Image 1 (cartoon, rainbow, N blue to C red):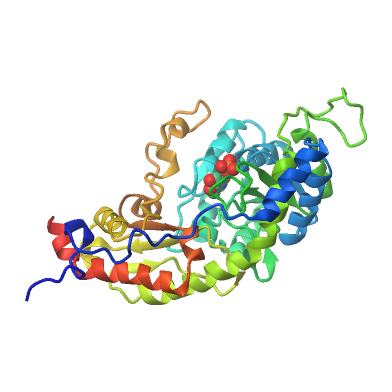
Image 2 (tube, rainbow, N blue to C red; image 1 turned 90 degrees about the vertical axis):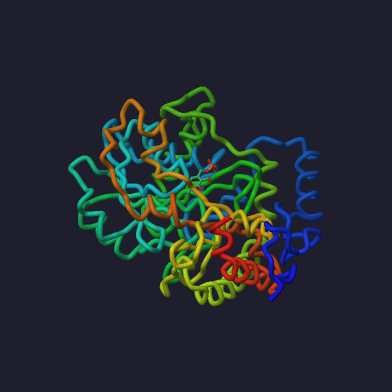
Length: 405
Ligand SMILES: Cc1ncc(COP(=O)(O)O)c(C=O)c1O
């Protein structure tokens, strides 16, 4: 039987599932409200760290169910400031996953600490079963990462931390609005950090935040971000060793408007992800990132799924290339190596010898099975989700030919 052009892969000259002229949702999303907010700041002449920053901090603390929010210039800075504020000393250990963005480990090293890597499990998040074996007398904190917005098993992590007297510092840089048993991410441990960098689900080009219920910790974080000054203190008095990590009024004004859209965006992403979860799980060789019924509000920064190349019929790389050709530009292989193999982490002066470190699940996701679809695709219509399913279905049908090519 002759192959029709629509059943032939676009990579091999067939018609793509999705017409290239049909756009996916653009990012960032903004309208006249952002424009007006920015113009208001401009015309006020008050551009510097003032009422709008304070207002956004109140709004964001309430949104994440915490008492305090301290904004900073980035998610990375949020982590570095927080680690200083908890008094991380040189040689102190922080337990982190190896499958995450660079900053989760680099921030520990830059504060003189030692990242101790605990593998992820099939949830793509830190495996609680492996944490206790990684605890030593130097361990100060556990830093779980809600990968892609999938909240970690915070019951287990908090229970282990409490038993060993460790702090839980959430890297919630993928999880704006996520909730575990009704409570916001960032509020589930001692403190949490967020990023508002341009690719993130609320976006001020750059920006970040620390959230916590601990007033003293929040005050210390604020002091560190504001050149070590104290609330009500003299301008040129710097009792704490601080830096300048202040947000501007422009960024805060943008964020306040972006925040008004987040809840609706989260709902749309969740609804669309449910369509993908259902349909993609039925394709042999594909496994969407599993959820957990204790996640009462799911934030999606990434739609994650794994391929088993043997069962699916072709490699991840070929699938990704073919999916792009079929009209899904937001698909990628994600992080390529576990963080302990990043040269600047492995060779940091205070890093231990990671050459024998093995984290098989992170390794598999990095090198063979992990696939991401950017959160912006999840803001599309139901028909867009059916296009994604049609793309994977078509590739599955052609997997063997693709594998041979
Ligand atoms: C998990 C995670 N942690 C920390 C960060 C750091 O945030 P930023 O880029 O704002 O410094 C990111 C940013 O991508 C991230 O994905």
